[in-house]
Length: 377
Image (tube, rainbow, N blue to C red; front, top):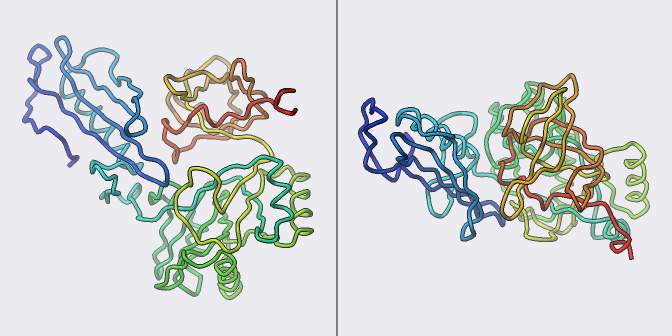
């Protein structure tokens, strides 16, 4: 049963007999520097009810909207209300003011209690400094989905970037079950393969406080010792010449990008407000956006959220081998740059839906704009 701030007993209430009070819930979400609120209400209007919502950073002006374009019967509004609350709680929102994760009863969507260390992006001039800095190693940034795997005996649990339990490809489950020790692995899932780059737990020990260099060494020994089909170690370069060679090879192979990690740093869940001890650089830009409308001939219009409203960033063609996403779906788009005057994307490519990204996280701040002479001076 979902928590509610008001409790009512309802029969099949006719639209001309609205209930005297509204149902309302405030949900909260904390992860790293994120501190968000999501509010849902059923309110009487005219001879029926409407479902409204508001969301944003706690303490800021909230973005508002409605899930009902016209008043509906209470039972219909209640269905919409409950569905919206369930969706948000499955994404990690909770009714508690402190945003402590709530353990759901459904297997998929449970809050695991673990969060990955998330990375901030850097620009090309910062890359040059890190390539020559001996305190940082470099790895390929795979074009996949973030994944933590917890192995406890034959029980394999997959956890996404929001800390929620997810289904796993059977190949990865099988590979993890064959490993000799219980462990917690961090990496990226690409198709039916997990590319691993960190070991944050071994047997009953947490390794998060250990320097990355020690965690990486322990991970290498674990994978060398175990049989683990479909689980692969990400290539790591430490010496300056090796980082340079790997960087240029990945560029030539048109890979997604690279990740730099400070060798003496512990594992810190969540994303820092800026900088950090793990940084990413993409060779091309990607962003998450919301489908605003569906156009003729397999094209969709996409939008992102600025400080006050949803803005259009242009149209994206859907390839024939992909189903057309529905309006309101969060999708991933690759592009070269965005135009400052219109925010429109140049050479956008549809990559697929993102079920691990919330609509309110699809912000204008993601846009990488075309450089101008003023920027380059």
